[in-house]
Image (cartoon, rainbow, N blue to C red; front, side):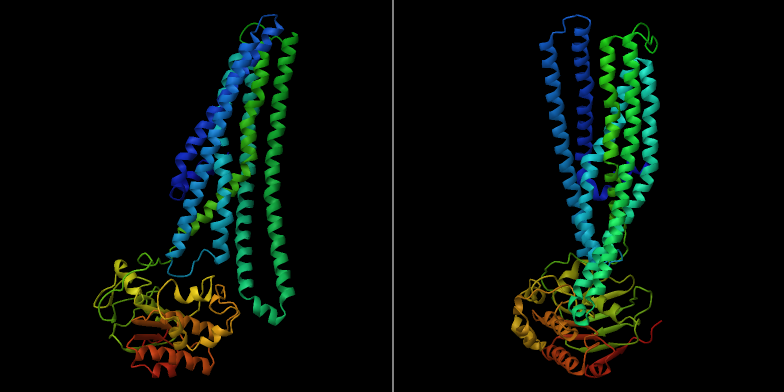
Length: 550
């Protein structure tokens, strides 16, 4: 067995803590269940051996003993499987909860992959951990104990049988280790391909309207067929490795059992007179050895059958570790609902830097003031807005809001006063009403009117009940921007932060968005816009130039 097989649980202890105790308990019980068989084999050998030497074997006692041990073994096996299943469910639930929590707290885009890759990891890929816990881990525990016990019993009865088992047994793990290297690589490639295909599907579904308008359906289908074919080939590569490992094991196991049977048979016939610790091999001892030989290889059979489960689980855990080790910024605070932070809706940045290390100019924005941030792309306009919104904490310097320093403890309360209009519109996979309200209370009709988007909503198939995709499927760029504005002003915020609110819009739509923002300013809202639109900047009270890009 390869070294990683014994390191998987330890390497992922943070994700699998809830299932570790149950997994160890299941493995211990599974080993106890396996140790019952040598006792049953001894009972059977004693009963049959007694018949062969014309000695009364007390068949009733033998039957009761064998049956009682069988019931004990069945009960232990059932208990071990129940413990393993519970451990697997706890492990998967914890890992899934941590992934969802990490994504909920993420303040920026994930470097791990798109929505399709994350959905595949949190969904179908995590389920691949269950076979590892329920099949591979107990099988590995049995391999570490049962063959050694059976080997000791075999040497006790016949050193020749012990030598046969001792020689044939280690060959199996050696070949499985070699095959395991290929299995891990094949499984990792398969996991990556699943995530890539999911990302591809999400991207094409979000652009389905454009694809149909452009008549690009056949080309998209061709791309799907090509990627599906790649995934099929990688899946078959994993299955080939699994079948190869099983074939190798069965070959050596069959040879070993056959050699034991030949030795026992010829010894009982008197053709062989060696292999025991003195005297002839008795029928009882021969039957006992014949019953033990297959069980010596059975744990290895079980491990081989679950070998690809381990390879798949290792690939999944590598992805989980890659996801959890991402260094992207986390959202300060809990991200939940909170009471509004008291004080004037003022904002100040002092000694702050962008993530790239560029210094931002100190600025103080009074409550109710209209300010435009201008500058070349990369000058730090978006970074400044994110600091003002409490979406990121400054590595150096301080952000002062409502007359006090902004901290992770006050971030939720400050964001409760904000209306946020990001540069790229993003929506939940839910109804338009859910996307506008986000669980908040407010005047929805007033928000739609302020963003001049009421007619757009009425023209949608189900109005406010129309479901949107992540990129606002069915909405044009201008409509999506105005829906985002309506969401920002819903709930009467005290501060509106808008990142490039008029970018890539025609003059008419840009005018409507501008008037919607200015309407909020006339209401006394503190308005800060980051923009390249000089016409919009000219209508603000003040312009702060962040300069050229580095």
